[in-house]
Length: 330
Ligand code: SF4
Image (cartoon, rainbow, N blue to C red; front, side):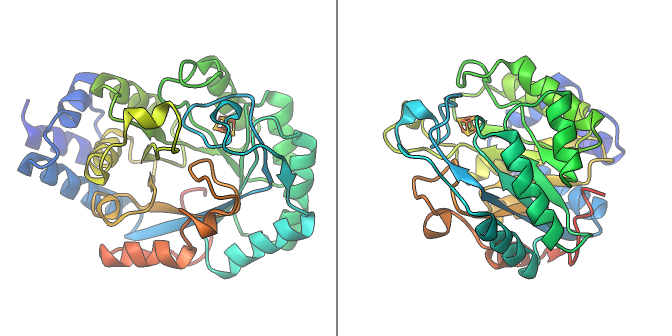
């Protein structure tokens, strides 16, 4: 296979095959070929968003041990990190959302653990929606939903949903993969725009598995795709598998961009990093409150980034950042 031919195909919005994606993923991370990939992804990503990267911001309305037991998540009951349950007051949720809006986040995400009551989640959504500017994009990040649940979210004022079929779903989590797919379909049918990602990447995942998931995200034509590595939660079984480097994550971010149709403008990575921005990530997340990759109850005291920090990382990679509502979710 010729690298230049595959890059040309991608720049022309022709689809890469599974074998071609595997080939790109198998290039050594420090090879000049991989740097060529990163450059091509950066060029394409910039072209598709008029060189305006975005910062989205997420906070959790609750913190609780979650029975779905995704092994990579600090909320998983079996990881034993968080024992008690707490939730934000509605005032605190509104304050968190308004602070993100004031700080210039291009979209605001409300997150809850999978067993949190959806009706209650929608009450938070309504309160927040009513206080935000009408053009601020509001996104839900919740557990799996059927058609009725998806409609409740839409009626509460959410514009979209973040949802992903995670790597080794069903074996590294207690969630049947079909449930994730059904939820994505339900969200779309309810009129919610879906953002997704290839996550959480670990060293044990084969290039074939990654290619499967890249093509899965491409098939749903989301607001954004991208790639995010697993962050080790200390003392857990998955921590023993280790973490991939930021450079390997950047390579997967770049291949994802090159493999996804141009109609998808967003290419995320998490956690925010300069190599990811250089490799064509045009979406980072700021976070406050509970965070599934953190063992601190308030991630602003731990791994969480602010909107300003995310912008600064983009600027260091010579990205400008968008002012105003997300273009990815339009
Ligand atoms: S990722 Fe979501 S569903 Fe899985 S354990 Fe964490 S909160 Fe629960």
